[in-house]
Length: 608
Image (cartoon, rainbow, N blue to C red):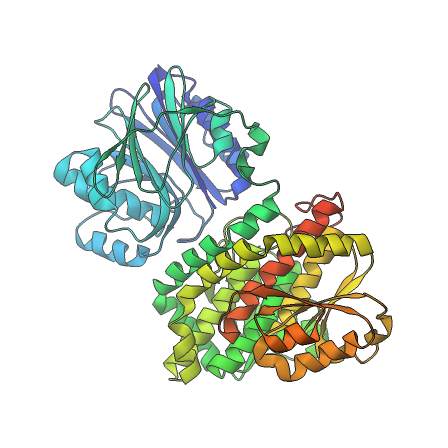
């Protein structure tokens, strides 16, 4: 999500604009809705041109190729704080326009910092969190006039994960900071640069400095100095020759984006937890809107619909909010209602552009007074713009077409809202859950670390059988079963039907023969029904593979149990869906397919 790039040449050059353009084009894949370019000249003057829209249009309309100078910064922004407009596009000036900086990441205490800096007399031009990083640095630079000391002080004000690049007109250097978000440095013959993206550097140089979290770097065209941002201690880290192909650079350590994005889930959920914890007024407004509704409809499609099924379970059980998940494609036809001012339509979409969901929104906007709120991953999207309140699920860009981290972040957003809503009503279980939400990133990480080999083995069994299969779920795991089945269909191209397990005996049980595969994500709390549903299959010689925390009842009843870490009943969907994601991924690989780009489908569905 977002990308930043900063370069320093040995002398002022007319090729700066072309270099900035070249760097920016390698950041596009990360996702963006605005872009900006800045340059510093030796006479102390600067240029800053930016705005929302497509990169190539911005390059052309802003005449970026004419940029000259010795130092330059580029940023492509995916909106989280502040709508996509010129003021919120990065890079940003400080109050006096003698500092320019840009960041990649999320500063979750943006609202508080904005109020503080305004009170201190700073000029705040937008509502973007990157601007807060610039002003935090400005605050201390005006006091110390020292890059290192000023940034060390500034980082104590900033909450969140980020990478930051900035420059001052009075110093012939750039400064870069890595605090949780990706950042690399490249060393050339007459330049040094840094970037969020390794591929954008490799087109300039193969001499790479792999930065680590907590690194503060001050560099010019021929030397760089790395410091520990907390202690100020010097760090020696020489460049390494990097022979990775440019097209593979964004996949460092992974063979495909799908597996990379599965592994990113713990970090993304942690970032979302931080964001929600520091957006309490927005979350409480969201909850108040739900509490005041006569009817709450969770409207979504595909993976987002599956998240909404689990989300409805959370809202009903933890918050006593009666929420009904509805497939967007049949909302108008099936319900044939005109929502009133007491009804809430909660739209859930990764892209924020899902046409089926927009088809629900548009007639409501024109014909009723119902409230439309949303949970999206792109805050500048069409659905977000049509909503009264928006929660950003903050999963970052998913390059792989099959959704993984956006699903878990949608799930976590629902759980957070439900637990807080129940806590506000003083419901005991919600109080308990809310105090334990910080365990979920670790739960996901532990699951990934412990189930890999077993998931590969199960995938091999599925590929060897080469047949269709079912994925069953009961209670809280119904949405998980649907999502697991979808992942298998998307990337393995075998028919896997997701179904509520109690429905399996009403016809589909006839398909079971010897070793017929059934995947069954389950929670021990639902054993009173799940064991019966397992037995119905096992007595007909089916092969039931349960995915659950350790539980003797399931171990005795099923053919096999993939054991995920122990956790609260409400947390189990986070670990079991990871297992299904991994099984789908490995089955795709063993079948010789590309899981990142399944045939016939698109990431953002903007058609009927």
